[in-house]
Image 1: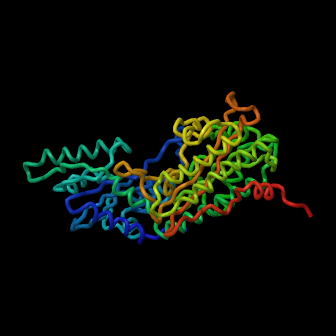
Image 2: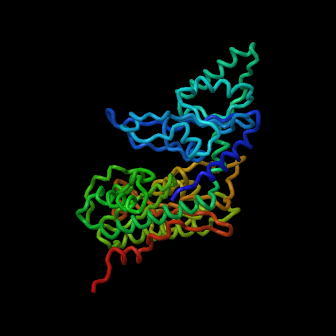
Length: 440
């Protein structure tokens, strides 16, 4: 499942208009990363670069130059090299870049330093975000200085630098129907993998075995890579928010928290489920779990166009605090407990984040000091949780060491929202039925 080139071309056309004829946008690709010695990590393209090109090679630079007669969309990329392609895989080359990626012109990446000053000449504003690639930043400042030194010969260096991210990221926040289709499929694949983990889980397994089963299901259904490092935390490990060692044995009577999502055509899914290793919730586990589930359902219910970003967090937090009061873990009035952050030892993170090409996707939450309203096409996670640390002596021992999070991916629609990951069970009854199927 892939986007065709018309989607990337449409995005570039919109951006060219926003830049204006006195501007130029420069965007380098991701770089390859060494894992150890002479082995690299699997290459993953920079999300903004992918969003505008669909081009999945390192050592490339996209330049958008509105009004340029020779071509407004220019890609610098690696040359075709038969020997290197034998060792390391195929390259598009300049001809392939033009033919397959709909750019106007393509030049070898080793000609970048020679050609960029001319492209920058007489452009007032450069759209570039410094800090992502410091080596490239140095080159860019050098090209600008080159132009300044040639001003007596009629060259005019840019005088303004604008944040490129602001242009791209505001557009990335709204997913098109084609993007929604990919994310819906990613959600389906991830949901199946979580179901598989529930079905095979049993005491004595190791966390990494569930991780392996999930990754196998991702790949088996067309998503080769996870969107982020998978979390499989049994028992106390579930109280560590970003636990990724995944090395411990799963014990009878404990819960296991799995936070895992696949990446499909660069788009992320992100699901968390918490369930009993032996298939049956204890009384205490069930009580805390139901509080988290009620909080998540209340949060999802609030998501619709026009509602402010913080509304779903507030809805979840109210349910969580009410539940903790009911169990006697917190004492007092809800409003004061929230104002005093008394819940923070048990719930220390937000209720969600934007989702898209990055699992923690781009986009701001506030504008002019006010939380953004939801708009159709926005995608986010909803993931309340409760974590009772094993060494928290302020609570009864029976609650300690229980960590629970429930997370789904949600698309804002014209009249409400759609849960993209609804395919995996999350009620106590559904989970127990799935893990302990009837015999006969």
